[in-house]
Length: 627
Image (cartoon, rainbow, N blue to C red; front, side):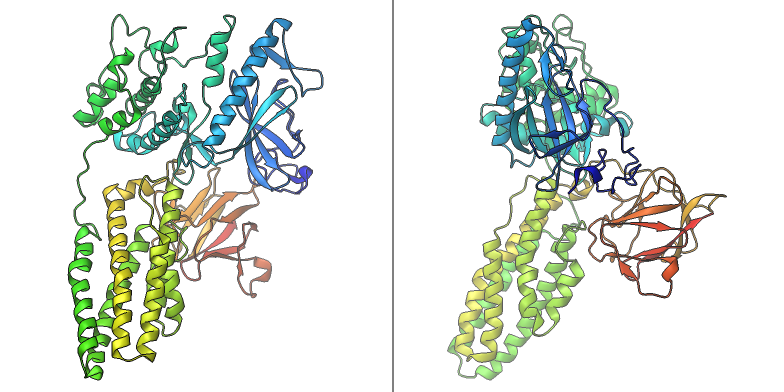
């Protein structure tokens, strides 16, 4: 990839366009200040630096691109602004005064240690993924994986200032899981706050920006004040000899929880030592279980010895007791039936086939039982994929069930349907950072093999041989069915509908109306919105089946949960469309080739007045209109 062709605002190849069609970033936009590295700076010989994502008192984070691996990244530069500046070359970090040399070197060493701590947790689903640490320009850099999303602070602002207890618990439980693992390794975060919790667009949650570096520098030099966030820092962080431990992060996490559900930052811990005027959330009108409220107030105790001493204790204390959902589609009873009804039937049939001389008669019973088995399998296939369907699974529920019925082909498809479910389920847990136990793909693979062996054995062997394959299949089938039932029930018990909803606030709902003069709109020519026009303003439109992921919702099963993104061309003469890895694809046709076949959309495409696009083959069709 050529560096000159990339947009510094989103790292998309725009062929050096003057204005990026994806993010409207101007090509030659300079750095916002002298201390920031200029856009298109090459670091460590391969990292192209773009716009600044964030700047604090001790570091600057840049959007970046790895020119060797073609990967979008985020790079954090150690830059304590109180004691440093840029040299005349606009690159080198240098101390403001010679008196600050030791402070700069000490802080750089702590920044390196922070990077090493992150590197140990690079594969953790709830810690920002670090790729590399390197020295350059007189300072150090931490290279991290770039993940699209927003901070928890931004999420709260977009939600009107506060969120429900259930929603806060959903996100912050994952933060607790990360802190549990960090504390087990002897690492404290020291700066937990809404600014340093990141919500991924796909629903995951990560913690970032550890406070170890700036806190250590404050301890090292009296000329540097420890930068603490008022309301989130416990009293021991204000004292030079304050003993810190897991209880320090617990206070900050409790303050973050309090801010999320009440819309208010707790009073500063030092002010609460003489008069503790912290209001209970319930007194502010917040709906919260009494047990959870007591745990939250305990986490926010002024004195460290009065708080929880472990994150695990806080997590268990604040989590309300779960009440099983009623009328769930798949319950433990299904697993019980598979164990205590179908398993004995299998055993009896296998025994009869083995001891009977009239194999032909029993083969008829086997055929009936096989049809019953197929019916149960199809129901399970549909239920299990339906439960994890979010547009990213390897197949769809109907396809998984339907192709199993095709003679001959189902011998292949049973591998994809049974073994494939285990992989899809595990990928689903990873995408949504769900703290649930993964499936063992080996068990599902053995079940698939035994199923095929049973089919082939029935075609080629006598009855006694078939009994062996029945027993073999039973040994793997029932643990597999039981696993499926238990996992889907676990999803139900974790209020899956809430978990599936992404943490990012959906864009405003588009309004259906007749397009005004000189307006740009999508006219629905076929589908459930036929005859209506959707005006394209400054906000993008996401089309899909899941209301939590899309702001233009379609009910068709052919549409993925998050299918297509549409936004206005900055020039105002058309729109851009982008397929979001949909299951059944998106198709377009330009007005100049109205009589030609539809083309499948690969990635992004710019459409002009009169061009059309449709989701899947039949779901809905839109025409771009410029009035």
